[in-house]
Image (cartoon, rainbow, N blue to C red; front, side):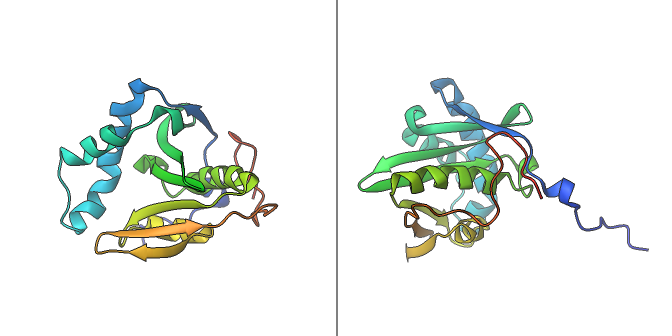
Length: 178
């Protein structure tokens, strides 16, 4: 007898109700801990995990001005930073708590971010660790590889003014409709 779980229903993969709120200086430690948690498997796979450095790098680059905290179902669920750089934006520190991953929340947040950059007509760049599952998320949303090195894959998505994503996202904070 198969005691495994059956495929998730549409209800189970629907993103939780979510909102973005401006990050503050008080959020840096909570975000640093989340970064350490979610990046650990990939950093260990690459032989680059350092318990102290993984948090310190976040603290050193944290900018409350450009960071939003993701709140899902009323609790801290992650963060995203969209920082101006050159002619476009740099997407960084996009982390989701493990318990909300795989439910469409990352796609919902990314659609929201990209709608804003498309409206501005600017490209978005990011880097992701080689072999990270996050690369597939970014590719589904139109990012392509610009360059790579032994550790990082650098990606870019050109602005798509007037572009509409195939599945119209729900208003911010509301669950998507199937």
